[in-house]
Image 1: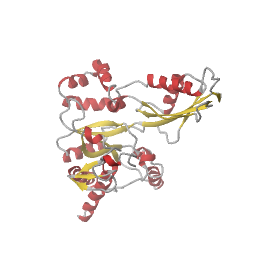
Image 2: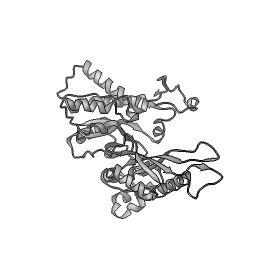
Image 3: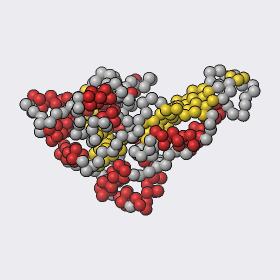
Length: 364
């Protein structure tokens, strides 16, 4: 992941030097995702040196292209394992964190394990009109039609819903909440509208309860006195489990209500992968391991709102988890793909201990 041009001077340490200073490992990728990579390898190396012999096979699978859909990394690895007849008991990938002070009304840190993940659907909208001289504009222009369509999409977003994994997360966390938050989460049958109104005020919380609509690219025209024949826009949707590429495409077509605007899927789109059940032995194993290394936390299932390449393993594993064993506060979240990305040395040591213990519990 590159550094945004023009922000280099804002870094306290050079972004690609891997400086260890002031109790932190500084640099792009320290959070996302070299911390997980190296802590796994350090744990495995320590155990190998100590003579540990696993009773079950453990695969360490590291793709090189997760940020661009993982088609040459994780997808190829999963296909190779499938060709060998391998079926995995569970997959653990990067994902949700141990949230400290992020959730209102919750005093204890929450280790959120991603048992579900949003789908990814990018649609390309193209408004088709007649090009011509700007001195004689028709009533409907490509840019005008597209602008109206995009305004309708933003004004008529897909509905917020509390269901499935998010509902289970609230059920787990509610007894640990204090004050009014506990009352709301314990009585969603009555107070759900109130909670949803609060969620709508914040992008990160809103993303948990709806399929999001994001206008990301707009292209039209190249000369100030010429009406363009086409206006093209790229819209990215992150699909909550239960929605599909088909249902979202239908929503877009009905919302914009204009036959002169075509809607086409982008390559790399995926529906939400299957949800892993929290009653599974592998979730219980992960839950126990987390609490052994981080005894102060409460463990709860969660929905991963971004995309990981773990979805490529769905054909060879019924249980997929997205969890990074490191504590994070709201300030830390800004550093993912952002300025001054850094990982504390203490957090890195916890990650190594976690992966070592997970291997012991799973294959010892």
